[in-house]
Amino acid sequence: MKKIIVTIDGPAGAGKSTTARRVAHRLGYLYIDSGAMYRAVTLAALRESTSLDDESLGELANRCDIHMEPGYESQAVFLNGEDVSLAIRQSNVTGSVSQVSAFPRVRRALVQRQRSLGLLGGVVMDGRDIGSVVFPNAEVKVFFTADTEERIKRRLSEAIERGESIAEDEVRQQILGRDKIDSEREESPLVKPAGATEVDTTRLTMDEQVERILELVSQCANF
Ligand code: DC
Image (cartoon, rainbow, N blue to C red; front, side):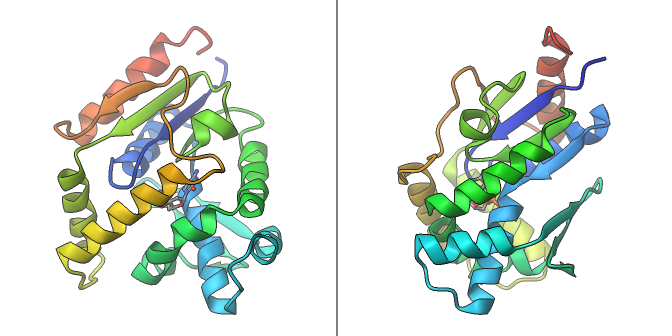
């Protein structure tokens, strides 16, 4: 059986990560959360007070050792050997990650690593530009959407689960702000990739989302 590449792109809160992780688990594939890589570089930039220009951030991105350990319920993320799985989800990182990830050299550094992780196939990767830029020839490409209010609700309950005290309005501002930067930036903006299947997850359960993707995989001629 050939090991293929499955990409899931879409805005924050559309349900990409959990779905992608479960799909990967069902297929025995590797799940790669590309957003976590941009978050890890952002955390490093905040810690080092790196100036927010292309050259400094690109150099930092090249220097960061980012390692991910897959798990069924969550994925551990290590930055230069330190477990930063929780730190990269804090609101200081969430508030700056779109700005950092818009810089071309940051993207170049991370896209290169993402491609090398997918060299042998057998990968489910989620993000904003995975089906359009990182793996334009992926066998299965999915584009998730969901109503904005539903996405805000999901992100808010995730934050509450992590024990963060964050107001709904702050989550709304973060999501709307990120939507705008991620889809309007010049370099690899968030778009529905050519050949992607759009799935509106607003009224789908997690199981339905997973099954929808597994169905696309099983219909894939190369699988
Ligand atoms: O998926 P996430 O919310 O953890 O992603 C965090 C940010 O990283 C997102 O707002 C934009 C950026 N990102 C990106 O530019 N390209 C990707 N492939 C993944 C994430």
